Length: 361
Image (tube, rainbow, N blue to C red; front, side):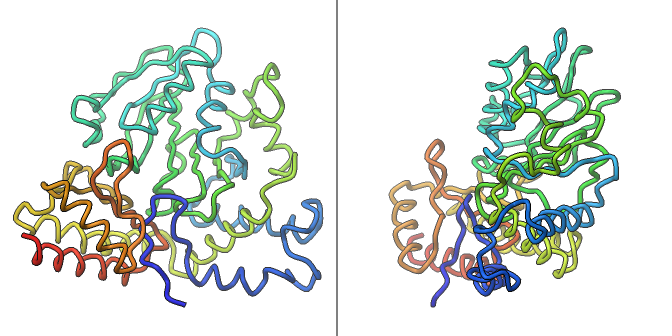
């Protein structure tokens, strides 16, 4: 079988080694005579899967003991609502940093639940940069500050994170979690949909400080309270068991690769191959994001001639590349280079881009 050069933005590439391991265990998991998705989530075998995934994640991110790890459902989009439902008490406001489409959706959902304000925005710059910490003005009655660490559509990423004395920082890390080391203690909560860097779609990872969990109000439905899931070790209801199993395999794969410091350098090496082609193309390719905020996960770029962009997509697909069309809201071109995208795929794309320019300049 020939594997595609997969640059999809999400669901995205999963390590081939992980897929092969899952394939070998698919029909008969650990001699149980059934697949992981067929067995009870109350069984000892599945509880081990659930706990091992938490343990490896805690090790990789060096998560402090006063944080809980939850495996939930509903994607990051459900977290957009759960966060204000759990943390936005009367007299408080949710403070949101507006950096693109996903940050905007989180803010919009918060306004449905309670009072939310935008404390910094890069909309005037077409979301092609991240704000400086000095631009973020947090009101005194802020319950939390919410940021999106990497915007997949614009291809911009926080290179460092703002800090606010006495105010909880919450981060949507859906598209760059585990791509680099992060000091979890700087955040009250981190959450991420699994389908970019962690595994298949259907699982949402939440890392949340215990004091925030304790504040979950009893006035909202049980399924939307963090304490419900924390108290049940993510087994309050039937979990996405196969997805959690896959997340566990991906986490072990990251550990075997050497951890987050090694993976960060690997990702930077991959993206440099493509950014260099853009920067050295004499204007044939134009990077969208400001250089100081360029994402190591989503490379966005344009060709001045839109007809050539269409031709680029057509020829790249014929050459085995998948997912290079930009998001429908902004157009252009995008290569998502998440953890599982091999170096060889990025080398192949860099070569293709050079050849396309040579043939069409």
